[in-house]
Amino acid sequence: MRLGTTEERAVPKQITPEPPHDCALCPRLVAYRNENKRAEPGWYNGAVGSFGEETARLLIVGLAPGRGGANRTGRPFTGDYAGDLLYATLLDFGFAEGSYQARPDDGLELRDCMITNAVRCVPPENKPTGVEISTCRQFFSARMETLPNLSVILALGRIAHDQTLSALALRKSAFKFGHGARHELGGGRLLFDSFHCSRYNTNTGRLTTEMFHAVFDAIRRELDQMPPRA
Image 1 (tube, one colour):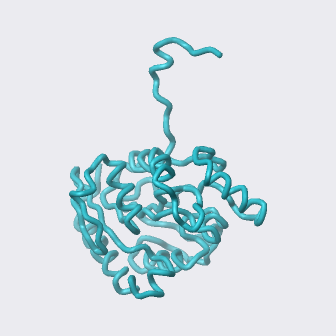
Image 2 (cartoon, helix red, strand yellow):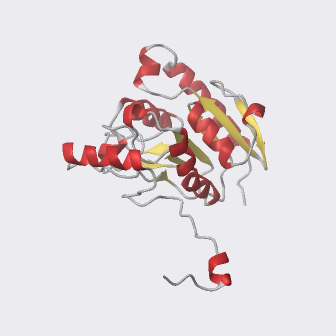
């Protein structure tokens, strides 16, 4: 095997913002993906890429693809209840145009917004391990770095919140997660928190539509006051 020169070995591998469809970095997630392929060969069954504009000022961070949602359709938050609430809210607040019909070819377009996940492959029981979260961080970090106008990050749930802080090398103890919390991250960027818009959270009343809208109302007001980033 050719190792190359010292100069060649010193060049770091470029990390892309989106992992390949068949990303093989997490053995447990690969095994679960293959299990889903056997059960549902017509589904997307792969690492789900981000959705939205590269010029976006708002980045929404979810947990991971749902088995019958994004893992089935290939688009974040598409095909399950969490997407019903999220996309309806984005339409209400001017972050999306078109009609959300729970499928990737519905023609819906995001405006000044991108949606991604802390972990890009579906985990069993919607629970990624700490190692899986850390392994996927390289793609999440690269995703943020390729958004030149990024001003506001919305973390849907604690894992998304913690992944954001870790990717930015910020101390979690200095930015406590809480629904509706607003954190100044430095460099003119803000982090907002919300409980995840999952069916469980809404069915139990932990998150109401009004609570979710209140967070987006705050984000909308912040962005409307900000000058465009260079």
